[in-house]
Length: 463
Image 1 (tube, one colour):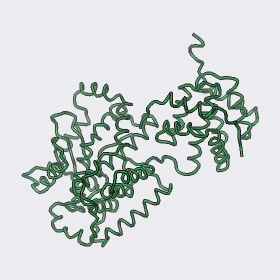
Image 2 (cartoon, one colour; image 1 turned 30 degrees about the horizontal axis):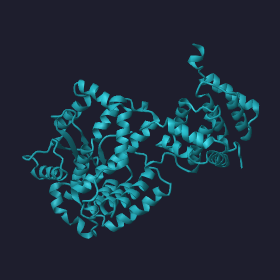
Image 3 (cartoon, helix red, strand yellow; image 1 turned 135 degrees about the vertical axis):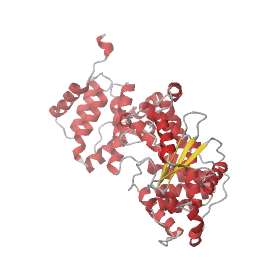
Image 4 (cartoon, one colour; image 1 turned 180 degrees about the horizontal axis):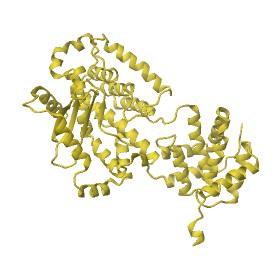
């Protein structure tokens, strides 16, 4: 086993420095849409037998829990603050309505069917029943668009006097019964209540080119988007208060099948969901789209409907969030993240002065593996850093010895990040390089490459 550094004050120093430099960071959100739902209000009356073959799992009558998820709220606030929402919103408000708002209103009015009491009285009443049940008093215009895509979406109004938009694609009416449509409408109204589209509009205003979003921010925006879907699902449940309806809606979204025709029971669906959820819980699956995978969504609603205490609900949701937090896949990525954190802490202390530039370099590299890199680094700094360092290094070399070059380049980047190269730091680099099998000439070559490619002298030293 490699044991390069003796434990001195490294871990306590690192802990104190990370705590001192601990500043909040952030990450991504997307449009408020529910992917894949299904069946017509008129047809629903003929299909009301759909649930007769299904055992009921309604869940308890809902009083104890609010729809909010704490981490979703935290991420929303972090993203808003990171994008200086207060200031940017003032600038945004001085501009005329965005092209996006004009596009949606023109598109809906020109190419979709507006739901009115005169034109579609049954569906109009259904939409407003759900809105009243959720206590949402803002103006909302409901539309139906002729589209074979099993989908619905909501768009928040930009102006205070403008109505929001909720659109239901016509494909939904071919598969879903009235209660399932009630769930979909509640879900979309949930996005408006939670102000998800408003946050997305801020993100798109600051980053019209989404590829320019910093990696750490991007991962957090994605996580927020996924959690916002779970919150919207809760509003959908509150609209219908029947867990079976929510479950059949999700499976219709996934398959596009009529469950009655296919003779599929609710018990079979739930059993299948449990098996597929295990796949994700056992570190085999990653949920990296803007919407969580269906096994997570179904289990999240099951917890919301049936948990007997806030503790049980929160622990269950935390377990599901652990799946959403995964970026890398496999043991190697786990040890690479551990190495980046521990090596960063050790080598940044080579000159006994942990600088902000060094912290930023560590966080940037960790962002490729961890959604909350600063929290992760802080937690690592409170443990036995040298022990974790040696463990991660040995495991990485055991799994893939070809990572030697990437590892030495990383520790050199930490040493160079503050634009000051100390003798003690060079000694540490050479010691590390020798331990992983490089000659001094090879180590010097890597150092020279880093200096030539990225070294910038401290401006104060030449002023």
